[in-house]
Image 1 (cartoon, one colour):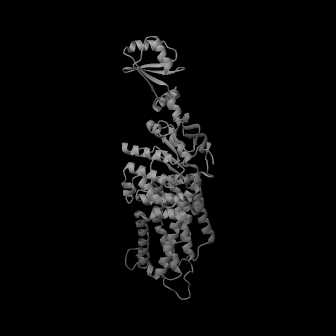
Image 2 (image 1 turned 45 degrees about the vertical axis):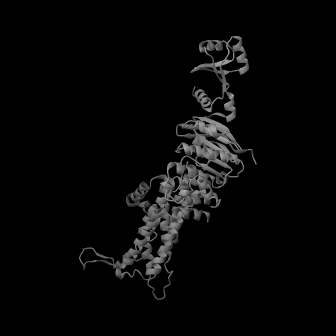
Image 3 (image 1 turned 90 degrees about the horizontal axis):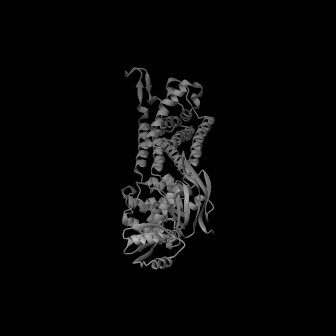
Length: 257
Length: 299
């Protein structure tokens, strides 16, 4: 409780935090709202071959869990920027240091930030639930929770991505640099490594986090579609997160603040 | 209950090639105002940083007298290290609420400490709108929040104007009267001289001196003498055993005495037919003692 209170006091009047969080919710909601009107043709002509999302029955249970969890995965970058900002503020204002001077142990101080990361991930998952609740169209004989394991995978995906950002902030001390390094790694380095050395492709961290939920739209071409998330894949993702956080923890214990 | 609020044993710290602290040991008596004195870069902040848990020492140990763990001790002491560190977008009260929840001391004393440092009028302004002096005063307020038995202040008058410096000095003396032990690091000698009972002198990470300030101030038996014929006085003085460091200071002559008191001196001069028009004993200032120490430390 004490720790929640400390973090809440910092956040409640921090406008940037609420604006970014608001943007996350609003843009994601807009995309969900308009998702079934999305269509494109390969040739660019109106009646050419292509995709039309309105045939996908995106909002029907149980499919909605897969579609929404997959799409929400694109917005996790906003959450990562949010976390990086909050972490770097503490380093820049030297309040992270001051907390130790004021009496937190190094472990407590570190766990405060891990708590923030978990809370953001849980919040994103909660929003996903709310969106499913709002947009979902009931289908006969199908329960609300069928295939809701996609939401759990989404939670782990966000947590994984955030722990990667969390890890970076411990080694790079400027918000802008961390964000740029994260983007470069995500867009260029990891995919390139994956292509060059195909044996490790499926074991690179961001790939592990992201590939828990495979792309759902291919069903229109008759491809088989993922119906559940393998437990071992979730365990692997959680293990990666844990390792990243542990490295940051050990580094944090040893260095001068 | 121990007699010392903290005992420090053989602290060493190296930053790459610079030896910031070398085997420094000291202990701070309960109820003292303990000054850590030294020029910039002498290891004051490194010492306090280690004692406050933010810097890891390479060697040595310390223990805060009455507390089991270092972080428990830190909760119960008030400390400022280098700069005042607060959330710029939060006002004074909200910033202190965060300090209070870390220290686990409740919010009841917030108005009291803000009044104590004259920030009550500005309690609703964001920290970023404060002047440097106000920021420093808020840091002092935060340090006082948990009603600490020990207060650690690193250069507390940094950035303050002369009135602010005088105010902080009074505050420290008032705090000390309440029986709170104050540890204060400074490179300003008269700051230490005016408030401290004990002093530790550091230079280039080495301990040069530790002891009571009164000891230092009484140590010197420095005298100023006057006579209408200074040349004659100077010549006569140079013939007396026990007169050291003879220098002219304007219309006076300044000397140190060793192994004799002022009566003896007066008598011997009278025997030479010199009747002094001026004889005053002066306390050695911390400044001259400090300069003497650091000079010998360099050679």
